[in-house]
Amino acid sequence: MLAGAALIAAGHAHAQAVSETELAAQFTQRWPDLRALYEDIHAHPETAFRETRTAALLAGRMRALGFTVTEGVGRTGIVAVYRNGEGPTLLVRTELDGLAMEEKTGLPYASRYQETVDGHAQFTAHSCGHDAHMAAWIGTAGSLLALKDRWHGTLVFIGQPAEEGIGGAEAMVSDGLLTRFPRPDFGLAVHVSPLPAGTVTLKEGAATSSADSLQIVFHGRGGHGSMPSSTIDPIVIGAHFVSDVQTVVSREKDAGTFGVVTIGAFNAGTVGNIIPDSATLRLTLRSYAPEVRQLLRDGVERTARASAMMANAPAPDIVSMGGTGAVMNDIALARRLDAALRPVLGDRLTLVPASAPGSPASEDFSVFIENGVPSVQIGVGGVTEEMRADYRSRGMAAPSNHSPLFHPDPESTIRTSMTALTLGALAILGEAPATP
Image 1 (cartoon, rainbow, N blue to C red):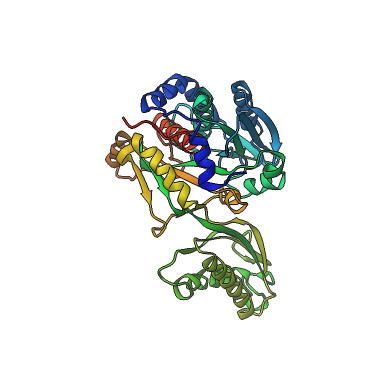
Image 2 (tube, rainbow, N blue to C red):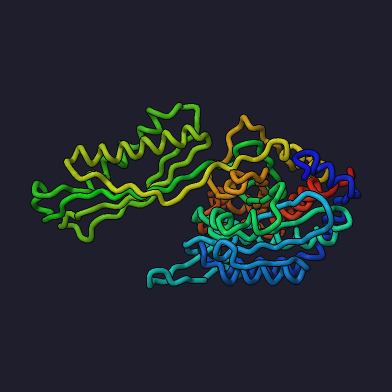
């Protein structure tokens, strides 16, 4: 088997250049169907490992294109394979899941979809852009098959569940993604953000941060609110911890390195005159460098134990709720993609050096990279100038991912994502576009 640059070169030997006009024609032909698909997915978000409707919808589309599709990989994931002669194997990934939150965009196709969780109805929303990613994924598959005389190799298109919960990529790998199916030589993915529509960002090295989720339960001794001396108050212990743990970031971590400790949930008690027996906190730790990741984890655990000890309380229960490493884009592949995309995108394309910081957000595309698949996650802007002007007129910035108001422009986002993924695939399996 060839490796690295030799694999890419093998793909080029089979290819003829594709023009910007051809790419535009591919999008125009598919846009009405992709728009309907996008609006359907947007209106019916399903959360982590519940994506049965979404997975079935995408699996049907891929079978219709001629892919061999396997469902139920990593519980609710799908794997679609298309072989087109000898050449590299390319993984192209999209996410299937939405978020457990209520959408407030007011769009005609806004989600009013609800799931039943622990006996309660919970609104769901595609407030991260996975709906646009999925439509672009389908569109890219169709474009590559229409251009299959320009490339040779194997496509492994995967629909990954549970990205938001940081667990779906690991579930797919554990279920044999890299052994039951052709093992990818390279991987690509896109992610939309509130950057200007039509722009593309290629980040060398760390593209996103690592993330570790923890649950900490502080144990006390409950009692009457009027007699606190007969109790050990876990709320006070937790409050001390919330304040003190930030010194791990401000006093232990080097000021020039990225690291964040966020306490996103603090749950304790039922009414105002009862001191409860316990308090439960949920945290997320984020960083780029492995040594900072370990420093944060050690500091959080040490501070939690010290907070309990200071109150003469039992040691807290500290449980890992999962985590993922930083997405480390392959530098050589990022530069190869830059060379392939620049003739079409021009100054709408930015190559960000490894020395610059990545996004503070996290996601588990890193799992495939950590399992030996050199990859690049491509950043795509989704906010048009008209949208930005409207937000300014209302005295607000463009909403970010995970906001209930987040809605990137579908047409430009899907068009740009398809362009980037198609050109990226051809840079690996085929040829860069012709210079206009």
